[in-house]
Amino acid sequence: MTHGIDPLDLAKALIAAPSVTPATGAVFDVLEAALAPLGFTVERFIDGIEPDGPVENLLAVRTGKGPVHFGFAGHLDVVPPGVGWTGDAFDPQVRGELLYGRGAVDMKGAIAAFVAAAAATPAEAGTISLIVTGDEEGPAVFGTRALMEHMDARGIRPDMILVGEPTSVQRLGDMVKIGRRGSVNIWIDVPGTQGHVAYPHLADNPIPKLVRILAAIDTVTLDEGTEWFQPSNIEFTDIEVGNGATNVIPASARARLSIRFNDQQKGAELVQMIERIARDVEPAAKVVGKISGEAFLTPPGELSALVAEAIHAETDVMPEMSTTGGTSDARFLHALCPVVEFGLTNATMHKLDEAVAVEDLRTLAAIYRGVLMRAFL
Image (cartoon, rainbow, N blue to C red; front, side, top):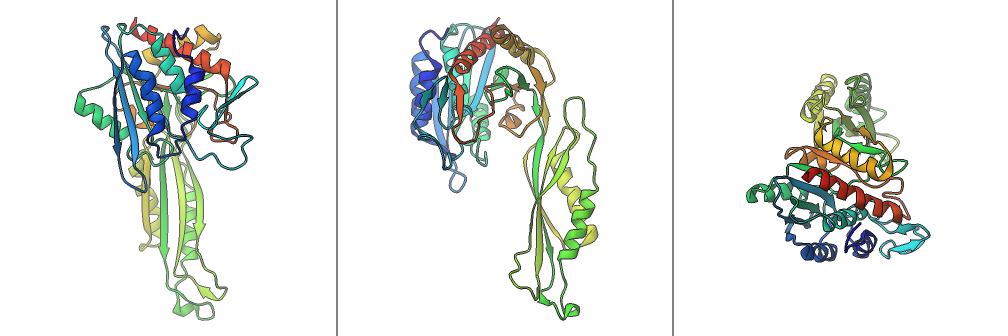
């Protein structure tokens, strides 16, 4: 069905261009070389400085005669391969029914499948854009948000966006993401006064204060969940004192926590809540929060329905609509238009010997083409 582009060949070429986050260069050359002959106008730009950059971004647009503009979003950066692969993580190999390589699942395979789908879709049917970053696996500071600013300056705004993240769980097509929880990390620093343990009246131990703060936070129930979201949860992720001596009361004690929250909460309000709890115990406590993204929901509607129809037509599977899992760049893109996420099975993403079934790769291309044709009808 791909009429000129085999997603397996393109996936192998993308994998063979190492692109540990933040990514620039050769991997974008591969994608541009695949898109240009299909009639896409390709723009690339590099944004950011170290340590979170530089990051390369790509915007490709093919203008059609139809009124609908369909956007596909994804990322070419990958996590570091780690040690212990059976082969070279950036030397794509087909062994048996599987294609092995870093990014095969997350998410060079999906990008290859979408390019194959675009190649098989009549150019006049409607406008297609690819919104592709090299900074999704990292801090995401100079990636999709920079692309959105670039699109806004150009007056480019899709009517709907599909993000090709690996959402399938047990088999291709069993899950579509229609939203994501928000994420905030919070650091608590409790000051004290260093001193000798034998003279506690001359010191101020911050550890009991930090323990009381964490105990108070641990009693909080944020919500009971919603129709589409599981309950928000607070998890402690680190406690640090750094005291190497057995006879010294430390000068400070620190903790870190992470909150994954649904659309009943806002990141800034959660940081303020933790700050109130901490300062009720110790007014001098310092609280710093970093919001990775707010919760969002694209209620089931036209976009999720056409994606589900395309999945069912190719696989006979009716997908579950879900908001589970971590964050993705959809947390930014939902500000533009309705957004859903759908891609390959995620069992091996970020793992050693990451692999995708070759049949799934080609089926995904067929599904993506079905999505495009339904969107353009």
